[in-house]
Image (cartoon, rainbow, N blue to C red; front, side, top):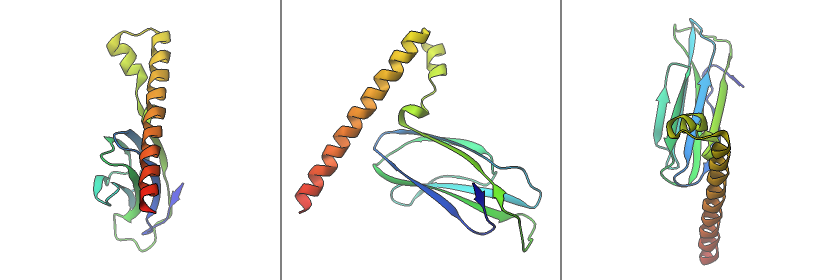
Length: 144
């Protein structure tokens, strides 16, 4: 996606409690501008910020709700016009965010065992999500 000069572009993702989130972002280097990124939690508190334009982040959600990922193109030399910057952003949440190659190496797992671990983690994630939805449904029922 493209980010225009002095225009913040944000994306939101609803994330359950205690879920791993992993993101990677990159922009082409420019001598006249840089892209700033910030990640906001459900209470609009910044939990990650970077002014480099390229990097990665990882965190485990501390509460269920909407997390926001914002990008802003900033002029580094005081120019009045800066052309839009192309940002590459890859966000992985939950089971997708796990690095199973590293797990396989550290635990000496065979390829079949790695696939079984992926299935086990996916089933646990579905179970956790179902419990979360039951809690939300009960809260809504008690509201009315």
